[in-house]
Amino acid sequence: MPCYTVQTMSVAFKAQNEDLLIAALNELDWKFQKIGRKISILGQGIVLDLATEQAVLTGAGLQVAQDNLNQLKRAYAMEAVKQLTRKQHWSIKLKAGSATAGELQRRN
Image (cartoon, rainbow, N blue to C red; front, side, top):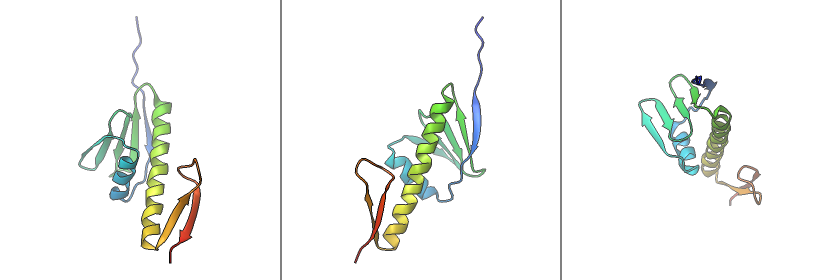
């Protein structure tokens, strides 16, 4: 007889700026559904609860969901850097072949 289990893991996820989070999700081209203070990322096994600052990972591929959550964290951080650089009149020059490594340059 097969044994069925439900795998769930909760991880701290602190995203104080919802607009940046939405921008990061759009940058990753991930589909999501927002209901109240919860964002369900479709097809990723991730539900973000912004009120409790928790991410709930579900499904058989918890490691894949954790990797995707880490990718979202990096995208969120990059959106924060982009917003700050626009305000300070700086620009970001990414290194070739990298989505996260680069340098900031002051615009005149």
